[in-house]
Amino acid sequence: MRLPILTIAMPLLPIAAGDSSAPNDVGGVLICTEARGTGICTWDTYTMGACNQLKEPYYHNVTTFAPDDNGFECFPRLMDCGVVCKSPTGCTFGAVDFWYKNKWDLSAIGWDGLMASFDCRVQKASNYCGAKLIYYVSICVLLGDERRVVQGSRTV
Image (tube, rainbow, N blue to C red; front, side):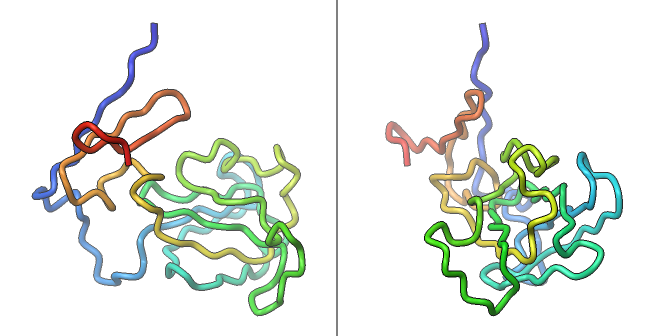
């Protein structure tokens, strides 16, 4: 029998809020040319809401794209920054966050060798169970791949 894992985020703990000298930089992303964090790798923090253009050797050559667990998500893009995407899907396969199962091997979804740029944004509290965004008393419930922030008797 598998039991849920419960964690409690307390609002007054300084470590919960984190200490950042750059308020727009939430967390880092590991980018590598090979799967499972191998090959040529870089790690950096990125400004939320800004397009980040990949340069060589990562341009169209990313297989690991692994955001930290800091309450943000990133959207890999087929297009360079500044190029208008005309695809109805937005030229991305969707959000990648700490919990995304294929972040260590984008070839599992056919995206190795496709990424040209990406942008990141802060996740909404309803999508994220982590101390960075939860400044109120809450319980984070993890059940397999499902995660929810529960406040009092209601789920948000």
